Length: 207
Length: 123
Image 1: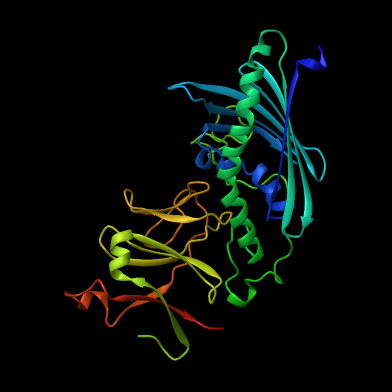
Image 2: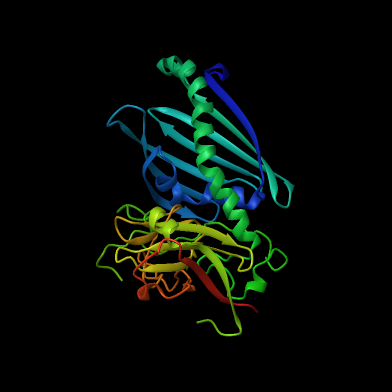
């Protein structure tokens, strides 16, 4: 195993949302197949506290072709999350570092590493071109979500509750900061927990 | 009719709503975003368009005659705003409205220029 077998791509972006909103977006797995065109299906098999294991069904730009991708995600520390995945036999490691700039802006460093040993070397020029393109597409799909999430958080929005009933409470000064806690809550029988091997799977007959 | 504690805000003209089928607007007075739509039976409905799940954008699915969230595909009843995807107590807040210069049902001509107003109580 050599370091030269690694393809590394790093993309840095800034956005007008808090670090907590940016991290929430990465850990909100329920939006993947609704918002992102590239996802056909996504099943969480296990998640707890700061880590998660899921299997994604990814669409590729060839008709009728999809592939299954196991994904492991961990919130390594307050600012850093790692994602390990295997796509078509290629192991990848994504490091996302989110640094606060102000209370409502942050910098996101997205570092991708692909282990391209043996025959996989031939994928290098293709991935070098495709990764920034794919990153841009996903970034643009997520961008309005992060901006809107920041807007509602600033209006004192509470997950699974909504805005406060009093209009005067819908303001930034009343909002208790942008709290971000893992795991991001999902309803019972969420569309992410329908795989029979999922730890949270409940059959239709169970109560 | 609105009482002396209530205020009204202009949403849109009925003709515009008929053309677009639904309109989404943010009102500073309410600190809320609303969706105004015409259901399959051509009834006007006004709800908050901020999904109570995580704050996603609600739109009107004309084909299925229900409200849906763009982020997680949660479905809501077009009549009550109740969540249809999961057995949760949350839902979309409904808003009162009026059509000026008179109620919609009393009109049979020149409806296009009628104006829809949202009614709310100032705190």
